[in-house]
Image 1 (cartoon, rainbow, N blue to C red):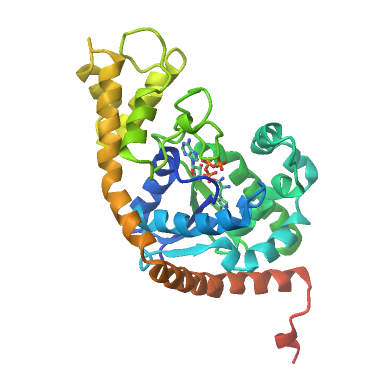
Image 2 (image 1 turned 30 degrees about the vertical axis):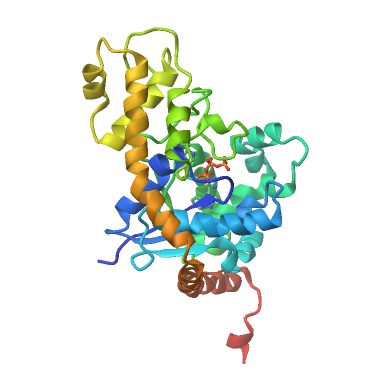
Length: 336
Ligand code: ATP
Ligand code: LTN
């Protein structure tokens, strides 16, 4: 039986965080053995926020290296940058013309981001989920692994597929399913445990980036906001900060949350924080070593990006051609 297709991506803003690792990339690496996987750097999505061109350029190289360092294999998977496959922007247009504005008005990420970013509420921020749908539908993805914050965008993508099927028939676009991991689907900010850890947060203390130095990691985790109580228990309502640390601990150690809670009974929050800080540093050490090697080998990064882009384009162009035909646009090569 043919393998199912998986696709996912992360926006090229900031550096990947523990939230991205636990909520997304950790699942991606687990899936690469069994599925036909495509993972990309959403560099076009990054333009919805004002970017310094030189910094964006460097960050895209760095992001790609972070994917590889986190264990994504460029031979087993198709790894690429979104802007290297122009079909994304082309399908985006066709889908934009199928998407009612009322559906986009409901997107909570747009509301959150435009509240935080009042000086630059651009149309791209608004139509962001349509480009995301194009990313997914170009590759006939069956399954899309994301963190919980992206669930609403996935639902919109499914609505767009229904609009497309109703207008043009069902043969071209595949209906994708979201895949949201059970644990760590929402890693919270270390400074405000009621909002998610986000790599573009202005407060650097709120996240651990996967390429932070051990010293920074120690400082950020030990400085994580927790309540003033001393009892160790998992309770997202009453003890959001501690529960977040327990979740991170559980995912990285492979131990159940209950086990960790028992282990630390009678101890202070400071003990958990210190051990968790060491665990995070140990987990990230090999990733950081690999990252440093890759960043010293830009030729290899470019070559790998290039071959990923060719593999992706070959697939994307087939879907786009079928979409243009469905839509009624003239295909010159079939008219000759
Ligand atoms: P930004 O702050 O720029 O919006 P982000 O940190 O939210 O970035 P994305 O690039 O939007 O990260 O997301 C990449 C992937 O990581 C997505 O699948 C997303 O659901 C997942 N993800 C992001 N933040 C978290 C989090 N705090 N917990 C779990 N998963 C997350
Ligand atoms: N919007 C996503 C990143 C992203 C994505 C995608 C994820 C862009 N295109 C397609 C899955 C499939 C985010 O996580 N912010």
